[in-house]
Image (cartoon, rainbow, N blue to C red; front, side):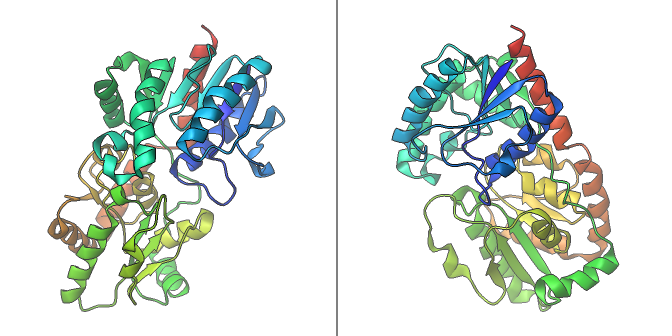
Length: 369
């Protein structure tokens, strides 16, 4: 069978949430199913690192799709023509978007509907496009995959889609994320942050990630917390820049995008990973923190309790006082081993091999029809 896949978010050194999802899932699926042919649709020159096996054919379709007008052209015209030209049996899209002008069977992944609930958090032209198009994508899809039971219910309710059409496949966690011994933590802390304990946030710099309240709570904590403590922010702006950089101080450090073993080392040595986003379809950093065996301070809303189980210090993301209380809980020495054990147990429920297998089962069921 010939399966075409939207791989426009596979961009070297610029993988964000959906890009990482695409990377982790596809590299497993194409290697595990050598009897099928996979056509990767890029919207720009591609990196060979993303051509995972001999059964992958990379195809560049123009124009680069980074604006709603270009989204329409790319999906409805470039993709539609390519599906017909290459006699494709199934189109798989990992970012929720589809061709509305093809009769080829399509499966899409809708990670969350944050734009439906907080439309003001995105640039106006992006929100307008999403609000108009995603209900159409959801109805057009032969099957929808999403990453949590929370998102499944949200998609079903928001778009009047029967739940039988939606399959839940949880995200996994990278193999670099591993716990380190207390002795290693003592040594590596000097290497990663000059021996100063720190909280860490990992993710895009985006309004819904709630970074301003996160830092307000840290500033409040520092008034009474006498011991040295930093806050390291790992990530880059998703849309326009705002005044977050005004929060830089001696103890708040924005260090940009990191990945792989470098990021895993930063997480494994932190005092706690903080992720107080007020809307998430899953929340992979929560899983990464648990997998590294460090306390995780996270929101008590949307999908995050589904991921964290009883292994997370939950806070109200809309309350600076609640977030501060979560920080204090994470700083208690008696809690470190407690959350380390709970987090490692909870994180073992998730892995990318399982995710890839479950996604393939959905794709294969459509190919058999």
